[in-house]
Image (tube, rainbow, N blue to C red; front, side, top):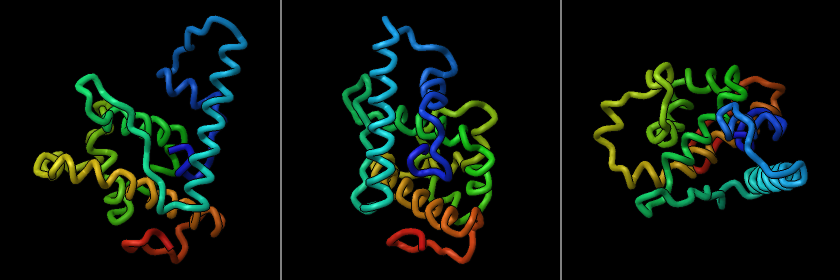
Length: 168
């Protein structure tokens, strides 16, 4: 969400969100600096890919305890990143067309109780999990395209539109 969103938050804030607001237990200041650099480098890599070659973006999901792609963990992390710029992301989610593009991500997010109202859980319950998993990369590409147009137009939705190839 940091790389695909309206603003790239300082990675220090992202670290706090990654550890749910608690400090990481690192052995030394050197270890903390190495972790910060690694996260910042990865954020820059994703940002460049989304701006230069959006169509090739595929999220790295990791592996969960059952040996499956960790879609829920990745989606929850994306959700936490959205919360760092919530004033912007919430307006996107309020739009029926644009909010629907994020349904694959939101459907796997381990929601806080106040956020579960953002999706139609009855609809999600009837969706094929594998289909939703495949749509996560498309959702990120759609968000990145929207925010790219939004930034280029000075912070407004402007005349952009969504189609199968992305946000224009």
